Length: 490
Image (cartoon, rainbow, N blue to C red):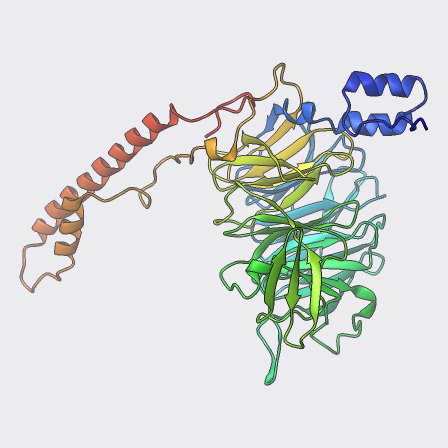
C-alpha cells in the first residue's frame, strides 16, 4: 500500500512558500513560521539606542500595536518613545520617590493608562490627559521594594503586584482600590507561619488568567489559583495550587528566583540566581506542598520525587538553558517569537543570550550593555527586541544584519572585562602593608603634618594601582570574541 506523503518537520523557506501557494499551508501559519525563522535571530543587530534617561533603565515594554515603547529608570521618569525614529512622544515624572522598576500599558486604554511600581514600594497609576500631561495616583504600597506587576490579559482594569514583603496585591482601576490577597511564605511550621519570601517576579498564565505564579528568595516557583484566595484580607497565607523546582535545587537555600514567564502553551519559564534557566511543562510541578527532604530518583526523561508521605510523583525533567550569568541583579527572562520559539535573558557579562526553546540550544550572545543586561522585551508582532540594563539607554534590536552571526558554543565566550573601579582592582603588596601600618592610632603629641604626607603617598599608590588595572583591562578587550551582532561581544 502506498503511504500518504507527509511534510517534513523542517523545511526551507522557499519550500514553505510553494506549499502556501498550492494551498497546503495556511497563509497565517506561513506568516507565523516566517516570523519565527532562526535566520532572523541570527541577523539581529542594534537598530537604535534611546538615550534620554539619566539613570539605569530598569523596565522596557511595547504597547499592543508595537509602535510605542515605554521605559522607566532610576531617574524616576517614565518615557514613551517612537522606537523606530528614536523620538520621545512624551515623558513625565512617575511620582515615585525611588527607582522605577516596572512600567506597563494597560490594554485597551489607547495607551492612556500606565501602571508603575518602584523601589519605594509604591504602586501607582498614571492617566495621560488630552493636553499631554500625566496625572499620577498612589494605589497601594509594599513594605519594601515592589519589583514587578502582572497585567490580567485582555483587562483594562485588573493587575497584580508583588514585593519584598512577600505580599501579593490585586488592583482594580474601576475603583482605584488595592486588595491584599496573601503573603507568600517559605513553609508551614509546627510553631506557626515561617518567614515570608522576598518576591522578585510575578506572571499570569495567558491561557488561564486565574493562575498566578510568583517567585523570589527560595527555589520554588509557586502557582496560585486566585479563585481560592480569601479576598477579605482575613488570612495572610494562601496555599499554592502547584510548585515548580528543578529536583537538584530542592532544599538549596543558596538560590532564588529572579524572573518568571508563562508561554502560550502554559509552560513556566524560571530564571534562578547563581544557577540556570529552566522550562517546566504544563502541569509539571511538584504539588502544592513539596518537602525539602524529598528524595529524587532519576531516569531518562523523567524523575521520581518521593515525598515524606511515601507518595512517589513522576514528572518530566525540565529543559535547561545554560551559559549566562545571573548573580548581581534581579534579571527577567522572556520568550521571543510569535509562538514563543526562543528563550532570552540578560547576563552579568553585559550580553543578551538567546536559546532555542525546544532543545535548549544556544544561539546568540550579543553585547547589550557596558556592565549588565537586566531587561529583554519582545515586540508583539515582529522579531524586534528591546533591552536595557545598567547603561542609561535602551537598545532596539532588529534582524537587519546583511550577514548571519557566527555560530558560537557557550564555551567559546570569554568572560567580559569591565572598566576598573577602585573597589575592583587588586591591591599591590606595598599598598596593603601601608594600609595595615596606618591602622595604628597616632599617639598624643604626634606631628599631624606627617599624616598629610602619608595620606598623599597612599593616594598616589591607589591611583597607580588603578591605572595598571585599567591598562590591563584595555589590552584584554582586544582579544574578545565577536558574534557578528554589529559590535564586539565583550
